[in-house]
Image (cartoon, rainbow, N blue to C red):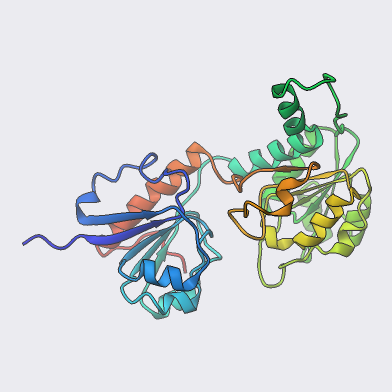
Amino acid sequence: MAAEPVRVAILDDYQNVAFRFADWSGIKDRLAIDSFPDTTADEDVLAKRLEPYTIICAMRERTKFRASLLDRLPNLRFIATTGPYNAGIDVAHAKTKGIVVSGTSGKGNSTLEHIWALLLATVRYIAVEDARVKASAVPWQVTIPFGLSGRTLGLVGVGRLGAATAKIAKAFGMEVIGWSPNLTPDRAASAGVTYVSSKEELFKISDIVSVHMVLSERTHRMIQAADLALMKPTAFFINTSRGPLVDEPALIEVLKAKRIAGAGLDVFDEEPLPLDHPIRKLYNVTLSPHTGYVSDSNYEAFWGNTVENIAAFLDGRPTRVIQ
């Protein structure tokens, strides 16, 4: 008698890409797959929905697997997450319950590309003028784009992405300064960035502030109303990292009062962004729906690796295990 298929839940696949970008044919006969594209943070709903499943495919950090939820999933044995790590999964607790967590590689420079796409769209008012042209609005031009050459880009975080962002900024003729809680002058210099000694100094000097930090308990809401108040009235704020790094209500108030020129945001406190969220109604903000990591090449790596990880788990040889 053939073995019962292993039950698999694919979560938060908003664009139905799991099967478009990977070949499941080698394992699909061993699986019974259900997809749940609607994200929910309600743990009771999640526990009831996911209770029958042995394998869960997690898309980045869209659904949080805290210890309290893992304790309510008695059949779960394997979480296949996209990306090399997932801060939304309590990996240590999962291990105590015998749940294996595997990640994936990525491909290309999607996030770096998106940082600059969003930054340029924001300071050059691309979305505003696109909407006006399509609406046959007059006059022909209304905005004045903000030139980059000779301006100062302030990086909050000068890790891999921050350093790569700095390199491109210099190609535009920008000055680049950087600060983070652990940044040293030597590390800044190695990234080609001028070190500033305080967050306050960075916010005062910068013409554009761009955030490149990892979200943790220590960095949660590290950017406060007092920091935003230091920005020039002509300055722009860009966040492609994580929404909760910033005091979102404070940022909304700054934008509403037009105390800075504008913002470009790819990330938010709550995602998907609620339909009635006040940030959707602001004129001086350019928004994207957390697509910084999204590209066809990245999805090929994410879902191709996910299929490989599931196959390896089914064969008793888990691979790409997150420790």
